[in-house]
Image 1 (cartoon, each protein chain N blue to C red):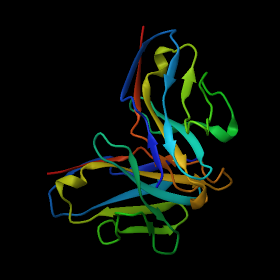
Image 2 (image 1 turned 120 degrees about the vertical axis):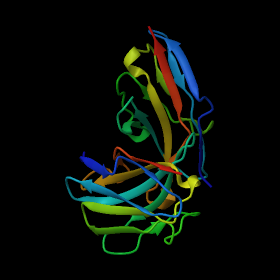
Image 3 (image 1 turned 180 degrees about the horizontal axis):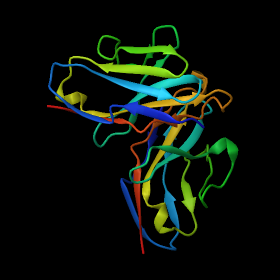
Length: 116
Length: 111
């Protein structure tokens, strides 16, 4: 497994501003993902964070709104840009550790975001 | 498109009663299926995956391709089983890298 931390754990933001969420892992991982869980909804994959290249976004998510960085094998950031109240969600980072079953994902604690 | 359906938002049972959390999926290929669990104030964690055919904490789940179901079962519920349970599917055409989640079922086990 892997120990995953996210910062911040929660935040309250004003509409029109941006927030960057950090995901740090205690060991090198092959895959890193970002999910969103809107109130009362299931988890939805936003994008796959690729090390050293642009993230791969799922349908309905774009880089201008959710820019992602992954400078190395243990760290990634997700920015929620020009926020609106509809962006109020829990944002989760997940990873696939090196040597693990490719589909075994481990999740961070999440970042709870409220946009006013 | 892939879809996972968990028809029950809340399942309430008494301790010692059998539990079945329903999960149905929609996918034309051969998926990998998982159950994830989130206990109070803890992070989401993998409970079991169908490929392993294992029993974790007394829970089992059988993939029924004919009914496209992957129901989670436990013969005797315990209070510590109270949690949020998510069924998830990983499509083969994504190299099993993508997880599609259901909306989750909250299990409440009363003494």
